Amino acid sequence: MPRRKPAGTRPHGLAGGPSGTNFLSMPWRPLIVVIATLALAACAGMPTPYQPKDNGTGYTQQQLDNHTWRVTFTGNDYTPRETVENYLLYRCAEVMLFGGYDKFIVLEKDIEPEVQYYTYAAPPSYIGPGIPPSRYSYYHYRYPYPEWPPYRVGSRVRYKATALIQPWTGGKPPEGALVLDAHALVRQLGPSIVLPKAPPA
Image (cartoon, rainbow, N blue to C red):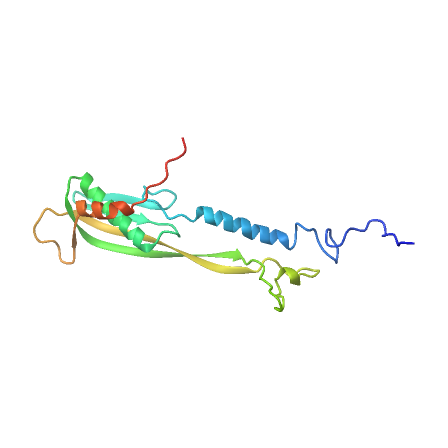
């Protein structure tokens, strides 16, 4: 005669108790969170386009006096340093052309890296044939579970470029100043400029 299960028992591994936990809680829930985080990061991982400053990234310009402008461009974590510098120079050229100047001098130019640190949840380690399970592996979970998730520290870098410029109409430029042709810069850098996508109609 087959033995009957005691009343109130639950299938192994599908509910709470020393033999297991809810199937959608530990250990799958942390893995689902990690996958969702990676999917969001993939969607957000686009370089800053050439645009006025918005949410901390983009270009700005400020006229300091009749002949001097300060121009900046700040990229996000996915914008290479070279792109930040090119967008800065392109904006400098546009500012000068809008003012009716063909050439300009760069009195100062600087590119500053800004490092930000963050923590993230490490996903469960992969277990291959013959490899002992790590403490945080899915196959190593026992009751009670170890503290989850194990956190790691990462870093991201974004660049801000700044230039101090003046129109140049001829004569000897100040010592150390760089003379640039605004028309030539626009022609040379124009094909690499990425504008923001237009919002859907």
